[in-house]
Length: 180
Image (tube, rainbow, N blue to C red; front, top):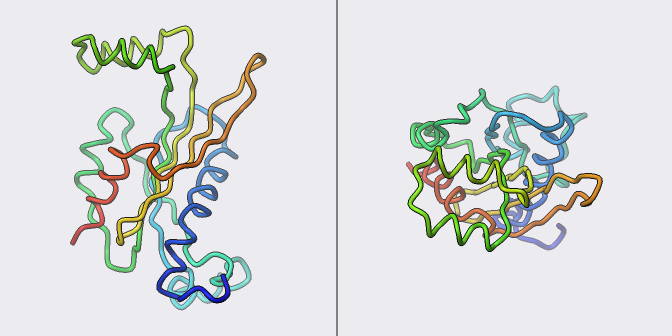
């Protein structure tokens, strides 16, 4: 990132950090609980823990994800609402497994008046559903990055999609945890 002002490096690095978190979580396989990560400046982490110098490079990775305690998968919104980060945390990322439905199924789901449990049942039982892992990452400056890994099968290959607006509600909830 030569030539990029230091103040912009974390924003530029955010998609790479989201991919790094997804790859880290992916290494443990599927069927995992949601995982939260604090994103801290690598240079500040090295200043606090110089013994990590051989493992981290602030020039290639200006942000380092640090895994946090497990989150409840059934009340994720409440858990996120109770999180407050210290100033050293510049951002956060959340990895969670979700079910992706085709557009026509999502339209049918939104037309029906289902409670949360019934909607989850509808999605889990839909014949065209795809399991996926979503990683949403945000910084205090409001920037966001998302990575979605669609689980593959014999018939359908695994896919990875990246776009900052894949999960606007989740990125908004994560940004709320970063407010003073």
